[in-house]
Image (tube, rainbow, N blue to C red; front, side, top):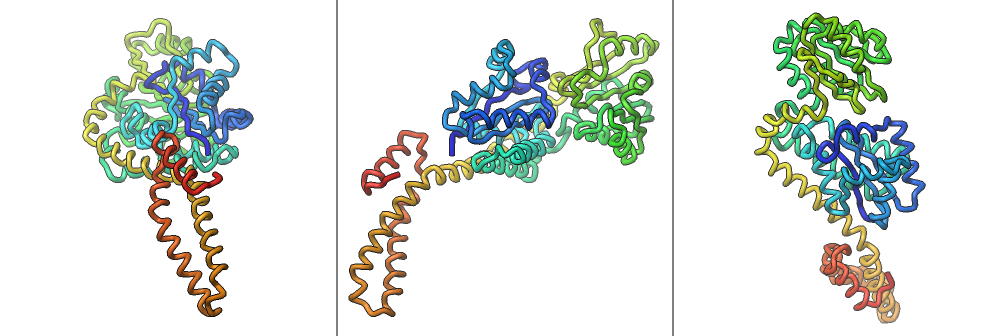
Length: 420
């Protein structure tokens, strides 16, 4: 089965610059998983990749070797980057790794407490790994537990009230610079999941003008039709940015959409008109000008922390209940894992007893009439099953990763001379 491992970096431990350098699109994620599959340290692997985190979940026999391989592959052969990843990453194994994923899915490890997008991203990570043939029983089970944890956290608590997505927090942030949205011209750059959420939050505030700009025009037109907005291609972004009072960028483009040079030129041409820009892209969609004008309000993902702090404080009362949900789902996963790891002992013990039962039946069956033999066999199997119930329960509770659990299994092997 292999031990569970997570190696990752996130907004909590790494600067945005490092996270930008680890950005991968979906095609690159597939290639990365293929590289992991070719490494002997892994039985299974999945990559959870969001705008604020990159985490590799894996199952293997040697966590230390697997961790080194993951960091090496993330760095792509760059020794300096490899060292930097080590400085700004975390590695967790077994119970701690599983608990981390469940807390992530429940929204407890996000910039925005109770963030809604992360649950879909956890599902997507498992689906991509499955399509790549990298998902086995261990990761399937722990990702299922994570999804259940996330669903329950949102259904059974009030964690998902207030701005529970980066998109909602971004729109809330722009209110400081542009308080009356009914008079604002808003430009949303992108038409992916985050950009769609942003645009919907903006549309609810009924801005004077809402423009969706995207490299592929069709998705932008589809979203614009839904929201009563306008759609343009990225070729028109300079013109639209000049007219906008709020810009929220959320694309996965490899290069900045708004360069420092373009921003500086726009601010010169705006005659002092204020501009609020929020960059939700990963890697960054907006370059910071060398000298930021006073009428330019520029924010990125890391800067959202201050905006969401008030909401997180309001939601803090829900954390204990969410942690309880996480613990419940974690125990279910760990119980399954213990059962799987001790299954050979359970099967060997049952085979040992039922073999003895069959031998005794064969020795005594001549003393019974043919119509009594079936009843005798049924009685024997039922008796053995009852006798084996308590030992089986104790074996299922044995955790072979602890000294006590290992001692229990070794005692079973020795007492009954089992070959496991």
